[in-house]
Length: 357
Image (cartoon, rainbow, N blue to C red; front, side, top):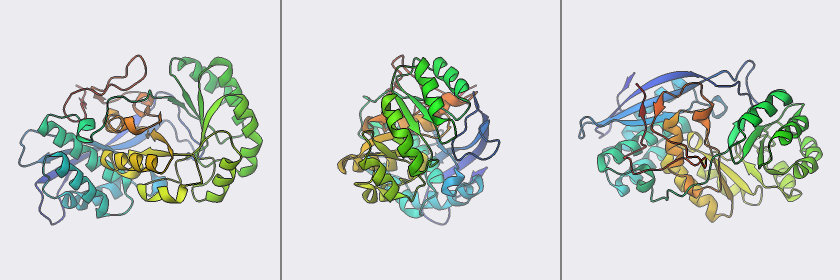
């Protein structure tokens, strides 16, 4: 569907496409809807600029209802975001300014912003012949990605862990009645770091009861054990935990960072939450300034969004960029995972991805 900008001076136009993509394995988290976990919906955009014929910027935004977004809400704000971007000067400074204008145009709506911002970075990268990480002033030296396993029966999760044994770390979704049994089953078949993500599914009593066992099992970190607004619970757990607690649902944009100082040791930055690669690079840098350990995460997205995320990954201590690996069929190619499980950042212009076939 083609989108025209709201009134304003811009040469940009945008088309968006809603994709419903199947998952390789069922993927459930603690706050999944009933019968969820078999397919995901994501939005791909193609951004063009009348000044640069035949150049198309690819972007992606994931409409997560937890953050109030739907396919329809994204479509509704695209014209506003294009108008805010204005006529973009295709330079590093011009791109940064346009990206900042997109972020300031409306509050929240991170998925819609991510789609436009990532497409804009891809477009400017192609116009200037530069990869997105270079436009952001960032390095190609990035951490390896872990691999995520959803909630399921312990023996099922353990079998998936065995299959993913080459990855340098596994992220295990918890928040159900068999959490300890699941972690023990995974540890029997996997001897590398385990990261635990409860997606707001624990109570303080559950966390305190499980913490000693998680330490014994060699868990590396605990992500978002409690509901997003329970800062006091998070702070109390962090004070008594030898493991870093990482805020995810509690930390959506750069504006959330200051309130988390002294609450958690780490924060999880996701492009679909904060609004794209420009916003993510600023948020990761600010988090480091404030003393946080930085975790770069993703949704179940195609290689378009994963490539945009990987461009910012040199600012992360931990990386969880496996969304495209969870898909049964990724419609986009060009992004390469090395044998060391690091995404390869090359000199290819823009994001370096293209639609298959």
